[in-house]
Length: 247
View 1 (spheres, helix red, strand yellow):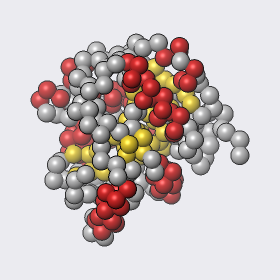
View 2: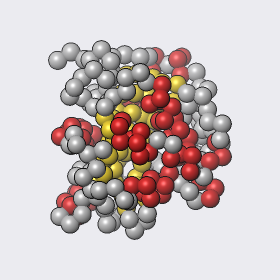
View 3: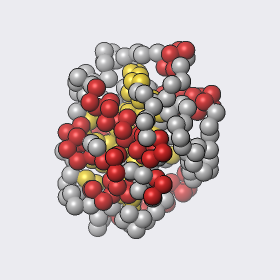
View 4: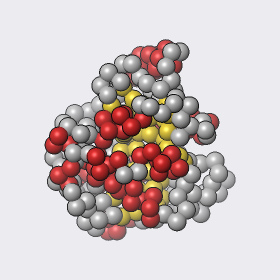
């Protein structure tokens, strides 16, 4: 089957939206060197375009056009945005500010899309995408942990209509300095919505990544993944909206 002319034309494929900041803006990050971050983003793009069209959002002044791996193709679209004017509000503020700006700028945004933090690789993304394609009715698929009062924003699948109605503009409530992280803000917003509209993934993501602030790798062993996947199946027997265990 030929690749679609744009990321939005295929009825079957759901694009992956990767959020990126090659040069961190006012945020302490474990990996600050632009060349290191660029290489991580390039590896993620190379991995994900084999599974879905990729929309790469970036909001720093780094000259991305100098690197051929980010040239636009039918499988990769790059969208550039100005650095945030309020970097002191934190990573979540800047990331969701950029997502809002992207949706506002697209004349024909995709109906549904999967958002992934750009330096992270979900090694079982094919299974995650199949789940998202099979579930066309819910507005948002996202893992939420009630004991911590947070929604895990590194991975979610959203319909554009749901995002614009419920999540657009929420970044303005973020202020990492006050502990008002986007993960907590979204959890509070989503808690009153029914499980038919918002629920957790069936699939445990197999995550290959390094935490942006701490610089520590996420646990990624197959044995640990199998345990978490089993717990997730048990969890769904009594609650499809929340995960009652932490990672």
